[in-house]
Structure formats: C-alpha cells, structure tokens
Length: 181
Image 1: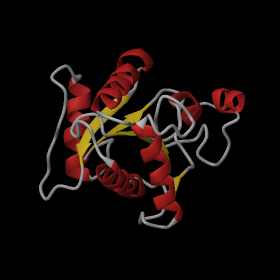
Image 2: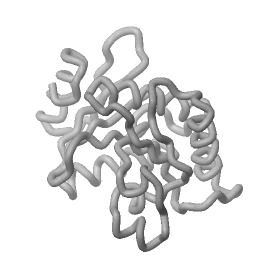
Image 3: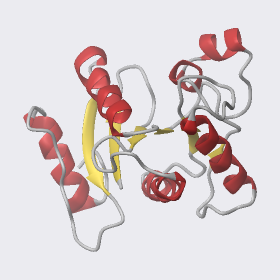
C-alpha cells in the first residue's frame, strides 16, 4: 500500500494519509492491510499508539455508503486486537474535519481518543486520498514523502508535479526508514 507522510505547519508530528496513490478502490481486506502498513510506519517513526481515523463523508454508519461500513469494521477489528502492533482505531467513520480539529469534533459531538487527534487517515479510495494530500501540499504548505509499504524491495512513487523536495524526501524515506530522510 502507499502512505503519504506529511508534515504540516503548526502541527506536531506526522500526519499519514493512506492510500492515495496505489490502491484504486480498496476493499475491507486491503484497507486493513493498509492500516497495518501505516501503523508499522508510525511505530518506526516513534508513535507508540497511532490514532487511526477511517474517513467518510459522514460520521454515522450508513449501509448505502461503503466507506462507513468499512470504518465500522476496521474499528471492530481493532477492538478484537486484529491489528498488531498497537493502534487506536476509533469507532468511526470520521469526516475529515472531526478527525483533525477540536472545534468540528465538539460541534458534531464526536468524542473519543481519536477525535481531533488522528495521526493516520484512511481514505475511502484513491481519489479522496490524492486530492486530500495535494490540497495539504498546495493549500496548507505541507511537506510530504510518498512511501510504498509492504514490498520486498524499495519502491518510490511520486507525482510528476511533486516538488524536488517531495521527491527527495520520498527517496530518503526508503534509504533511512524515515519520511524526513
């Protein structure tokens, strides 16, 4: 799977977004593997118990929206300790705003240890992840490294329009095992 490790101005630590560059329409099994890969990366970068938010357009389970069903299943899998190493996959789904901001979480009544404090964002599909990361880069000044995880050999996957710094950080992540190179 693919993970964007991003550093945002004013935010402490990395924000990981997965999968916005490789898996087009991941099913539940692929999302679970993506969570595992991202959690392993977060652990390697010093996050002892990463907080995972499975994103959707709404915060409530809606059987007509597959992303909400997947988010609920990922939470159940985490409760049953199907993810190792340790992570928190809060009872989702989360809309982006209440996964990363206190004001939105409070306004919508979304509580728990992941609300407003997510470190790993699991997107419903490649379009959402790709647009989210590009908006972080081009609107919020984020620095990003794109990392392919779970492979038997190093793979660097960047956008043709990525900055030289982003491409360098992506290469550096493979060389040193960190997103900051």
